[in-house]
Amino acid sequence: MSLRVENITKRFGAQEALRGVTIEAREGEFVVLLGPSGCGKSTLLRIIAGLEEPDEGTVNLRGRDITRAQPHHRDVAMVFQGYALYPHMTVAQNIGFPLRVRRRPTSEISAEVERIGARLGLSHLLRNLPKQLSGGERQRVALARAIIRRPQAFLMDEPLSNLDSRLRIDMRAELKHLQHELAVVTLYVTHDQVEAMTLASRIAILRDGLLQQYDTPSEVYRRPANLFVAGFVGSPSMNLLPGVVESGVFCRAGLSFGLTSDELRAIGARREITLGFRPEDVEFSATGNPGWTAARVWVTEDLGNETLIRLALDDVHVTLRAPAGTRADFDSLAWFRIRPEQLHWFDTHTTEAIRVSPQEH
Ligand SMILES: Nc1ncnc2c1ncn2[C@@H]1O[C@H](COP(=O)(O)OP(=O)(O)OP(=O)(O)O)[C@@H](O)[C@H]1O
Ligand SMILES: [Mg+2]
Image (tube, rainbow, N blue to C red):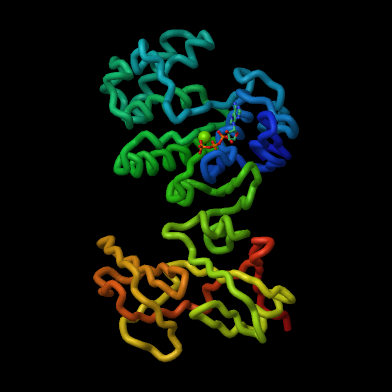
């Protein structure tokens, strides 16, 4: 194991920023910490970097317990949201700074700066000052300065959040490729879930300092552990309709659903459950189909490559993805069908997912 944080708890006064968080990452893994504002993402990175001390738990890097080690003895490089470049130093001096601190020979430093500067497309900017750079260029300087140290781990706290959306997408791809080349374990904080899905080998989803799920992007998407993860991962988010089970049928206003024997066995004695289904798992029809559910068109959003349609079903909205150019007038009657093989079920009280598995024979 390359990096392991175990049972980390951190309190700020009465506030518990992290509660017993355990995450381990293999050599070269790209782990994304995802969660709403204030859930403890930055605090966890700062604890790994040595900028905060945990109240409980340990941090282990390549077999070494670094929980109480000084930041400069940890061999981790952190890239912050604001990049924190030295304003009075040129790009070359900024990039070379970590090697100068280690008193490496000047010729070696300038060779390394040129090599890494070229790798990140900064060769023509090496003599500039940070204030003469664009946001994306500054971001690359911050990355270059982190890379030149050849650390055992990278910690990145929302490094792309200051960039416009176009640049962000380019840098996202660049970062992913670079991390693959360097093969150094990376912990990356974001609250942008597209970034999380595309960059991560595994995603750790935090809420109120508690780890909700730690798994691959596709597992987190296809098998969310609870209602929070189900609603947080995916855009537009999963439709979640609370209802009740009565005589083998899931009911809520405007919708009833016969349950299979596998589903009924998994649901057991629960009565209040929540049905979840993703917008792409709903079919739309402007004309009535037998067995489909009727609803009113609340709004349609044409995104060019697809159309998002929001239907009003009694007191809730159901969002679905339809092909580009699908027409639906405000307030008109329309029909939808949820693909029965793509349903998710949750215990409404505990919020935990109910896993349905086929009966063993
Ligand atoms: N130095 C501190 N003193 C007191 N409380 C703090 C301190 N640092 C963080 N906190 C609190 O701990 C919680 C977690 O903060 P943290 O910065 O880790 O959140 P985050 O997930 O990074 O949020 P964001 O997405 O907004 O950056 C928050 O409630 C925050 O107010
Ligand atoms: Mg933060």
